[in-house]
Amino acid sequence: TPPRAYVVRIDLVHEMSRRCIAQTSTSLSDQFGISWNTWSKLRRGEPIRRSVALRLVKRVLAQQGQDADPLHYLSDSQAEGV
Image (tube, rainbow, N blue to C red; front, side):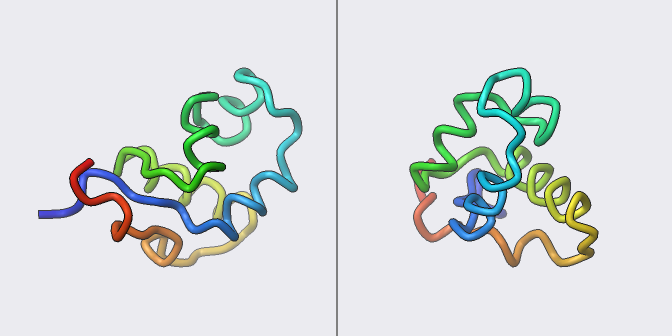
């Protein structure tokens, strides 16, 4: 069974932070397709729902012009039991 939640690698979160137009609910939703709550979890290194994590990483990689495997940027080690 796949994990229910993933932790996004901190280096990708830092890259998102650098590229973030504005840390507002509207801007985060428009740019990354995430809520303020999800953004807060990402910055704290907390797990987010699997579907959100996969969609987010694919979107960020596409914005960077990369075609890497999104699972390379996710970890389920800290997300057990979520």
